[in-house]
Amino acid sequence: MNLIEHFINGKTVKGSSKKTSKVFNPATGEQTSEVNLASRTDVDLAVQKANQAFTDWSRKPPAQRARIIFKFKELIEKNLDEIENNWPKNIPSGIIHADLFPDNIFFRDGKLTGIIDFYFSCYDFYVFEIAICLNALCFEGKNENLSFNVTKAKKFIDGYSSIRKLTEEEKKSLKVLCQGAAIRFLLTRVFDYLNLTEGALVKIKDPIEYLKRLEFHNSVKDYKDYFF
Image (cartoon, rainbow, N blue to C red):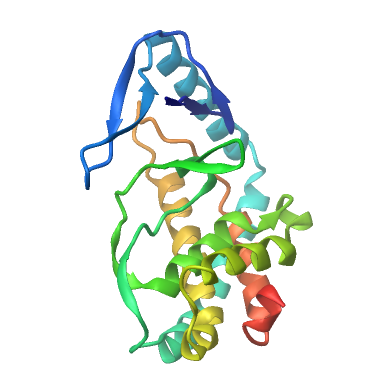
């Protein structure tokens, strides 16, 4: 039986508790895996690592943080009109997860074994899910060295297309949806930073990573730049 372990500070952690709970497929009622239950020690470790991440960000010099905020304002104002004017209307839609980041996806031996955190699940464009995944899964490096991995993106699209083919209209919409996804996560990261609640179990993440993603999407000519 597959065991879902803790994910703390960017790593899989077994934890100190031996207690587990069963995980069921809600559609069939079949047990699919077990999840480790956290002990007080495990929770304390997660909070400690989250606080360390916040401290790292808060130690950035005020001038550097100011540059980020003004650059953020400039990019948002520049892109919102373009996104609004080009946002698609009549392309295939359905229920999507809308938050498929690495810490919400579990693999074992190269196979997908679980997906968690359906808080943002909604009815939206199927290709918007792809735009989110390209932002979350296909960039490598940090800040100034951040780069888009076309090979990863192509493999992702090939795998997706083996189950469901993209229409030409969806492909044409990919750039603006990637821009929209990048702005969404940029805004939520800034919001989390400015509205941190005392004692909240939130790991503050650096918003500048999504400024760099947005700059990349702005340089894209069409969908072929993503996976061809």
